[in-house]
Length: 198
Image (cartoon, rainbow, N blue to C red):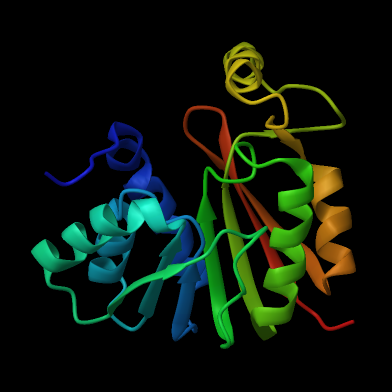
């Protein structure tokens, strides 16, 4: 049976509206943390000008591949194995990178490696779009995000909602500059960084 995440179903149309703008000129997208695979096949179907490269840790590959097989999208690639801390990064470059609901389930050292890897793989002028909940100036933006943080840390003390300014600092080290911040439903945002060079 294919994996299914209700949250993917709920947020896909709102995210698509942003990707239609930010990835309008892109050709090759790397999705980091494809999860169930639902986002990949939906966005690839709605954005046929893109080649969508899925990736995730190995245990999620069968579910991602099941969605790809069932939807039969010509522009979705089978998942690459990518644990940002332990796996080698793909020997490729991309003009767009997308990730959803990943940095708050990573430890901070993994978040650092994520941005460093993206800085190496993104082509000049390319966009990195990151969806999820974020803090502003060290503060939660909603009561529900504060409760979500408690739940995250009960599962893994290294995880947690990340602050926009701290992510901007990592991005800058990787040659990226924030160019947009979209307010999304359910107290989420999409932050967009562009590769500007070092």
